[in-house]
Length: 192
Image (tube, rainbow, N blue to C red):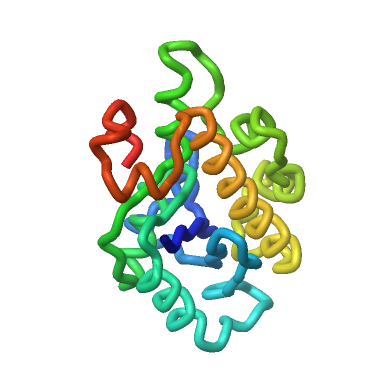
């Protein structure tokens, strides 16, 4: 089974209420995509950045990975899949959302579902501190130095994969069991 963990970074726009939105419907742009098949190294591609040229064959390589994937993992995967579809990538396979899985594991207890907190719970780290000061000042991923974006993005992909693996242990299952015969793991149907 080919299990692919993926994460996108994008620009964001300030909203009139003081918040921000990174959704594609507000003229935001896809900055980068990182992905990793279990057991392999993380791949990282630039699509739109102030100083970094777009990666040659980036679209092709990401689409090729999506074509090979049986399961696509992400933290808040609805955000990533929205961007993929908006940018004309194709993927119609199984999805696994580590944020939703963590909600299921919480069993009505209140704990943070953000990747930073969830990753720390499972003994890994999200390198949020790399971009915190930039984000607080309103700087988008488009203007953050690309080497920082790449390090941050790779760390997100790797943290998300580690979280997914640990969640499967907590559920007492494997991805193969979950996706080959979903009836054997019916109590987490909302995760897929």
